[in-house]
Image (cartoon, rainbow, N blue to C red):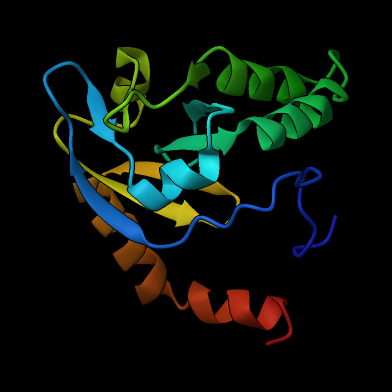
Length: 157
């Protein structure tokens, strides 16, 4: 797979853009930005562990496509079994309530070190949810490393 290929077939046409600061309420909920809620519609979505100590929200169609690709990994592969555990044991279906709030299960909040302030960030066809402090650290590290330039070069830009 090349750097520009998606690891799964993207099904949805949604494009989640921007970053938003949110607070976690006492019940472990955050309010999704209105434009994200519109893109998710009433089909629902799934939240699970990301790969960078953040959480990811996939629209139902993209999560199903991702699930099919992961299912193709052989059970005899240690990496395949680890990925299945990482993604699926933490996954939860979400449907925003009437006020646009979603519950972030405690085990996912613990994984991402989310306690109060979060960043909800668009990543094209999925949404990332970060602890605000960890978001700043990750973004600053990436920008300072020069990897942002390397990423552009990989795309031939």
